[in-house]
Length: 299
Image (cartoon, rainbow, N blue to C red; front, side, top):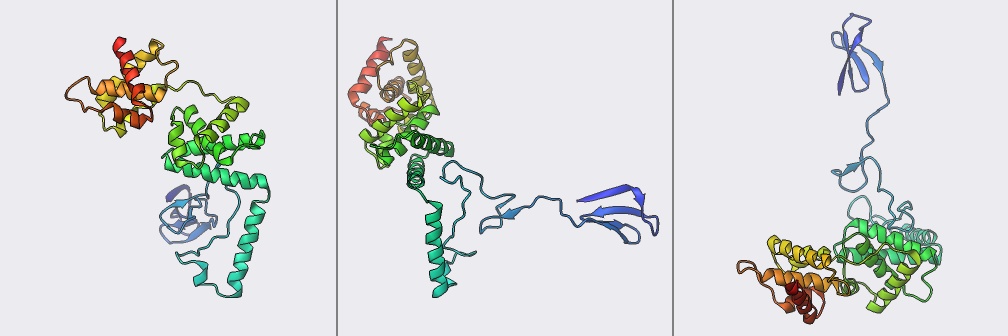
């Protein structure tokens, strides 16, 4: 960046001074009249192997790690893609291995920290398997840590609390997943998730109310290859059921599937879907879909 200093002249030839970078130079005779060696620009640098992703700081703080991402790690690779074994041999490699082992022991020094590491890792795995946003992972880790601080773990499985944290976070963020969807990718059973979720909801007072069936419609419509017109019509059916209080006591996932089935068969030009396919997507029985369809037709 070049700045023009119009308030002073060159002390040698009375020419105009111009600032280039850290030096103030006369345009006529080239005299360097002043120099500022301090670089006041941003301290951009690359924290990865690629020089294209340059950042001012390192990774941000995160609640999805037990140490908030502040601790360092003794990695297995050098600046290139090669590992330490290609550069270190003999005694030095064994020393690095011992240092890495002792460092990991010091970083996870208590059983509580070890449980957090295990739970956060399970939450991250479930989050990735369900294609959920990073905000769900962060909030689920916070919920898992709150459950640990309240002493809810004794007598219950860590896997169940990890799965329940993801399930509860999805419900509170209006991005619900069914229990079957979570337990399919989690290491917890339905009973373990239900027991952990009941403890979270009872002891922590989660702001989880009844699930709105319309929150399932976009995802189910995408899985059934239905268009936006069918989804929009199904949304109208679901809204009518909610306004008439016909959703109370019903499985919201089954209600969404029934609305999509009824909307798909309303016009010939729209793609059709069978009751079995709609029930399979919603993980309910076909009788649940038929019951919803009968209620819609009555209204």
